[in-house]
Image (cartoon, rainbow, N blue to C red):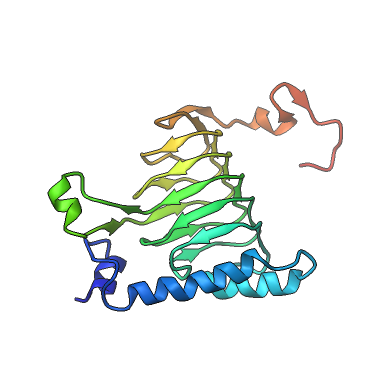
Length: 203
């Protein structure tokens, strides 16, 4: 098993071996082009992000600047939106479902290093997959750590550090991120805290 295969298997690997450094360099060129496209070139923006990522739905919008290591390890579903400064260290695979919304300054880290300095200084690192379900909203300045799974319909509050799995249908917030409460049918009536919708076409 070479080091790329080890990386993709979530095993310790060396990131300069077996073509990985070259792959990251090629992706950096695509990312640079994406982040510097004129705003009127919407079709080229969509074409290029679909080329960078491993899998997307028909509609996708990631606001520049966006950064990732490989790109091909990221899969997103339909109606995916990420705001400014979205960073994905996609050493491990990152899978996100339909209707996922990412606020500004969110980072998904599949990558990590051994704790002990001798092990860390050996050059080995690792990536462990991250999975995010459907209809998830990730608040601004959130960090999602290696190996985390976030269930369907979850809201992660701004500034959270998600170190453990979050089940479906909850609001979770904090550092470390913890469940605040379940999302209920009553929540449907409100657009912000205690403010009810004054229109009927939101249902």
